[in-house]
Image 1 (tube, rainbow, N blue to C red):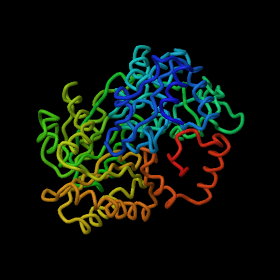
Image 2 (tube, helix red, strand yellow; image 1 turned 90 degrees about the horizontal axis):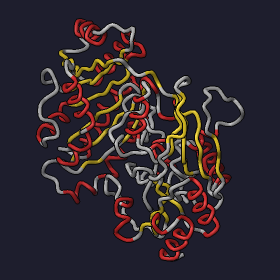
Image 3 (cartoon, helix red, strand yellow; image 1 turned 30 degrees about the vertical axis):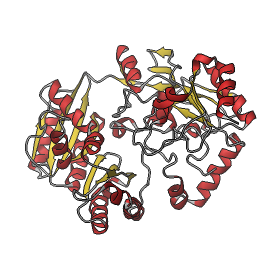
Image 4 (spheres, one colour; image 1 turned 90 degrees about the vertical axis):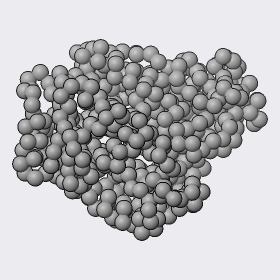
Length: 468
């Protein structure tokens, strides 16, 4: 069907004011890494769930592919076209707070609210919405559920799947799955919620969700600790977990090179570290009413005595804590400003993090002398963002031609360590072939059977996660 005909039909279903074409589509087509760019037939922005249902029912009946989109922050191309004449359905107008139960600590939110807005809603009611990630000001509830987002608090609260109680979703044929639930226990058959979460919009469009909130911490204790390397970082994780228990809510591996690049490019105005070190660990304790202050300081003093850390900067002011977290959030931006990079979002067992970093660096440097390793991330759950910046004297075209070779080297190390080639970013269109190469064949058969059952016409996000 011609793009003009698709846009006209969509306008008849949801109103012309909610259909974008031409240059107005640009913000919905340009994904963060600039790797994919195809025109869509139109962008539709329904203002109610019934509008999403109408679009899906029509598209399914007329052979038009639908791409669900949240805040367009995805990093594997799952939210943008991979073929022409697809229709993007943006959930940005679904922004209602449907319910908030102060006694149970449960909130029900529509898919177009951002994570930062969810955090603010919870805070106004003295709760914590526990998901925290660098794109929280723009990523939306529907999108983070579609990708099962993780972020920096996974060690304490889990991925978003772990505190989502239920979802509402529009299926491929326009039917509405009404799975919202305020219950923490509901053992009545298959977990359809968990089937939709992480499916990247290939099985349904999530329009609302209910979440279990957490108690709001009374205060935070934050530090940037100097460690000799990843092995000591893992030892520090073990030490802080034993000392702090569930008070340890964030722990991140930071290379010195990241701080140097951020200072170079003006992303931070001063060095947050106590002293120079090849590696650091950014760690945070969340303290509640009965907790005595100084728990993190005492734990780090013990780690210093045990030879696990060499030095540490404790955040003594809110601005110092903000600087530490600003540094963590600028990891991708400093790479973008410095040079082209080849990126990996991988996970291995926590104990294997040192081997991952050592072995992958050795393998890649052997293939590309002068390449600049840049490994950082969530050591509490084994999720390392393992990037490599272009050598100083190499041109961009030559570097781009080495991408597959670098991927192959990294993923070979990950596989040998029993890891995953996608920890929290998903599969999208970037890793479809890779998934087929590494996934258990029986698991792939099960995935294809589920897709065929729920979306027999392959209307929802075709070409993402699975070929088709």
